[in-house]
Image 1 (spheres, rainbow, N blue to C red):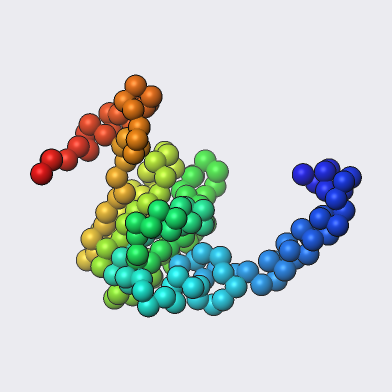
Image 2 (cartoon, one colour):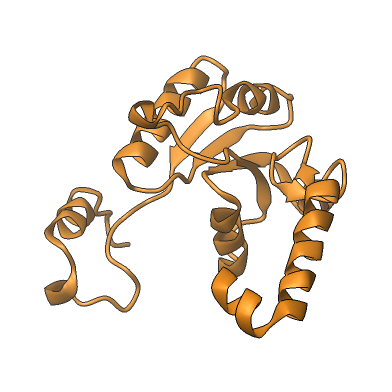
Amino acid sequence: MAYHLLQRDQEGARRLADSLDYALQHVRHCEKCNNFTEEVVCELCSSQRRDPALLCVVEMPADLLMMEQAHCYKGMYFVLMGRLSPLDGIGPREINLDRLLKRARDNMVKEVILATNFTVEGEATAHYIGEMLQNEGLKITRIARGLPVGGELEHVDSGTLAQAVLERREVK
């Protein structure tokens, strides 16, 4: 991209540089959810239409955007900005777990929904957070996993199929 901009679109390169400079000067972390914002408290955290009793923990801002695009959740969020990965030197301090604990203890939150990815690191992060919050008097839940909507069994990997069978639920 850099080569293309330098060789074919120097004005585009200048606009990109200006935009990045602006972001570095004005974008910060929301005091409540840790997502990126230009305000002290972001628009989602300021909304009166969100349920403050629900706190969904996601790894990255892109995960929050996917949740919002699905229109399936109307609570609050906390963005970790990563996941536990000891081999990469990423521990609880690097993903703001102290801030998450403070947020979960704000007397508004009743349920924490762990929506980390289903990777080894995401599972470890969800487990760690669950252990960390277990004595806080909160309901701790984990998003479900299994077959995608519209998916066909013959095209699903064996791990996903096995998990779907293990986490099956009664038909009513």
